[in-house]
Image (cartoon, rainbow, N blue to C red; front, side, top):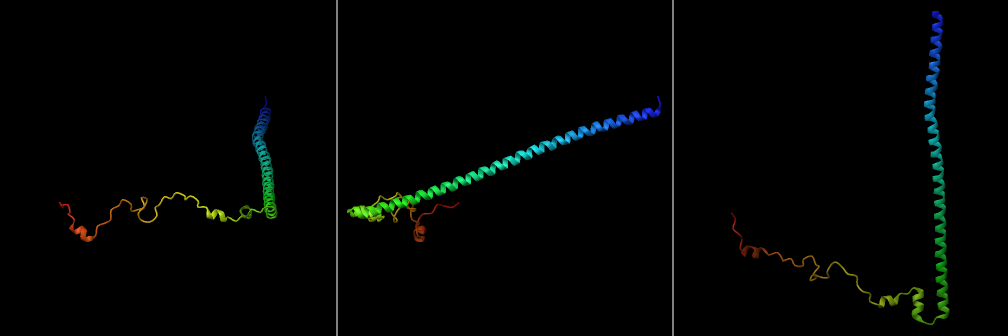
Length: 150
């Protein structure tokens, strides 16, 4: 064979090997791009779903707040209706006071005291100085026997 034929064959083989290696590198690099696009698409879908959940949650709490204010308003209306009816129909003074919110009866009744963790005055058993002896004055300390010093 001729040397020129071998050179051409070698050049064609190198060209084909280069095309194969390039296609392999392109495929490997393109696979990562496809994965990244799928991850980005999933992230966008997740963010959209999160925003929808946030909007639904905001709507839910707005509706709950409206319903709570409606219940408060209806409760106040019911209380006013009861007070007006009691003023017109009830002759009992104590019942009228209770409906109007006057708590004079509660002040007259002596409620039980809540237990405390301290004592009144100086003689209680929970006082800070209970069971502690008083310090001796300087005169009493001088006359008291002292242990010998070594």
